[in-house]
Image (cartoon, rainbow, N blue to C red; front, side, top):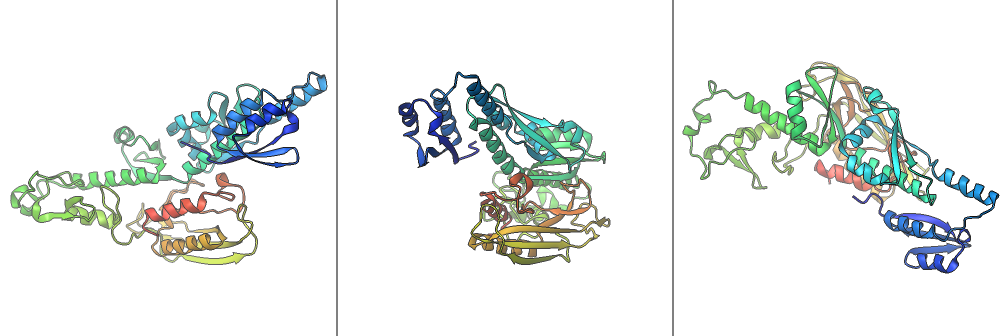
Length: 424
């Protein structure tokens, strides 16, 4: 995985004792010169290789004062600012993305999380601090900052694709599901008949469809089957094709084939479409997807002349969402129980692409896709209105780890998330 595709560093030629070799190292890189400084652009790997080469021609004063300066510079390079992140997201990264995390640090850096995730995971609103410690003093100050940027980029992409939900699972099924869905992180919840699941929304959707299919299969009983439900009541397909939902042979008279060429029992497909109008096999959308966002909400839009970091030429679109409290319906996790409403504010840059995203968000809101009822990833409370896999910027500053700007990939990511839900 390529974590950063474009990095820029500033190098002062006065720091190097051999100008000929210095320029030889720089000549194959894109660069701009201002005074004695060069602004060099490239990938992380290219600039890391360059920094190692440049370390061989860097000034190393033999005087006590010079040694002190170099030592202080190196110590400063190892004190790169830490990153505060969600404990839930970091727990998922450490357990499910260990290879990617090791690749970020490489053999040179240790990525540390404080406090221990095991002590704070029970409090979903908690944050942890991630620091980057070199195994030895960095030979070039830019190294630690690169590792930090690589981590932030990876964290941002991982967090934007994560969903937290609770599912009714027995302790015995818990282990079986963990083996079947290795991309998901299962944790016991306060309710012994439920587990909390964290993972990419695509895998969460597959888990929910799997559980729904099992519920449908277990509800079938030979005693209740009428003639129309038995193989003898109809003609089977030429190869006794099985329905992917109920796993039983499809009766030809009851066969329903979608445009994507996947076939199901008509009744099974009808029930699946009542849950979500997508093909249970490939996920292709059919019709208009409607979510479980509670009724009575409002989406109001205002504008400001102030700009967002990364979009200094433009004003700001401010979206105000309000969903009142109410009683859960059959489509919600706990029908008949009250749920807590929510008020949220989100921000978009006020230019052509931002305005296009705003129109798509309006459609998603009208189709009840922006919010749902479930467990809040920030407070940990159940039976509350929460975001529904369409990530918003709820802060104007702070970068991706604080749901703010600058975040150059955000508009393309949210467009992808809307596309998955048929909003394009």
